[in-house]
Length: 325
Length: 219
Image (cartoon, rainbow over all chains, first blue to last red; front, side, top):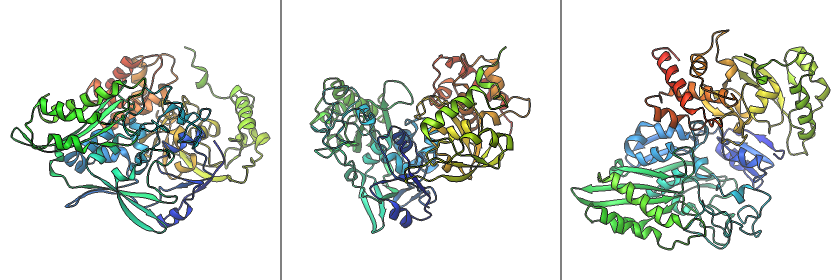
């Protein structure tokens, strides 16, 4: 690990002022300490934001507010989250391990870096880590990589399960910097790689995620997160689906669908949602809608199985929610 | 039964294998070299040879911190890069907490911060201040083993033993969190602790046994 200066600011504006391009914010540390050891990130200043007041989980008529410093474990088990947005709770409980969930903050979870082995290995080229150096994953070990939102520069998947659930629920993040605050839809917050894979989101130097806002959605009580992976627990996804379903009798009134493990960012699927809306609650409806999830997919040599897998994941999640499984 | 090498106390003359390795590591990494403050004189003296503070390329500076480990608060000077794991092992001589992957993947370094299980390898020592740190050495009451420790012995919940301190710290938390309702729930909530020997069935049995014994007890 490279040497750094440690700072412990007491307020958001003080923290924002310390946040420069060569600085890193640290909350739980589960991503940043790992990447500093690997020398994938080499900040000369580490700014500990744990003294800031970005906490609290509250439900109001507008919906859910989660302070960015809340832990994954506390958020997953919060009664309002469990009752109103099971998809958030399940996505968190299927992430990481109990120890990591006790450490990692919600804001940090949304900012975790890809698990692409080339990104994590400083001895190999990586356009995300060193712009312009190349992407060995495109013709290399790419079984875990993305099929949606990829470019000729980068095919790395976004690793967060929580982000998939939040994108499905149309959540926003509140960002704060020395120059002010802004609220950004999480779906817009994340960027596809294009020719600039080192830019993963809209966050500017010194800007912090202070809270997450999830709009009220009464029927999100019927929602779930299905995660398919190589082992049953403590593993990143091959394909996952965050799904909510509004059902009246045997008709689908509305739906929300986003997928993970397959995209360069959490992948929202408004077309699948439209294909479900107003249709009968039946496996055929689910299968027809899920087909649209593969639109624009660019499979690589070792991950073509994900095109089928992501559709089956969506269908199974919908079957479970619809009581048909 | 001969205890594993790691459980033997260090030689008090400062010439142990661990001390030798520590000095080599300190020389090569320039990391774990600063002196603890206010520690027992013998230990400070033992380390006096390599207590020259490291130069930190101008970017980092040494920090004086206080850590509360197993009920004792001690002050020490650290480079901010030092993890809680390295501080526990190299500075407090509490080598029960194991360094497995050192990347947050194996759970061997699990300790409790304010009663919650965390990974000490991904925790910077400076960030563990003002918290109550509990390690495997802090579980037993005198000579009386913690019920989870006793259950691991009773159920043969290990083979080589390297992952065991982390498994036990995780199991204590798993039980206090209330995640022992079924074998599958235990497996899910213990999944952050890998055992390369594959002692999992016996670990699950140990967690079940300890949970049953501790039922009704105040944690």
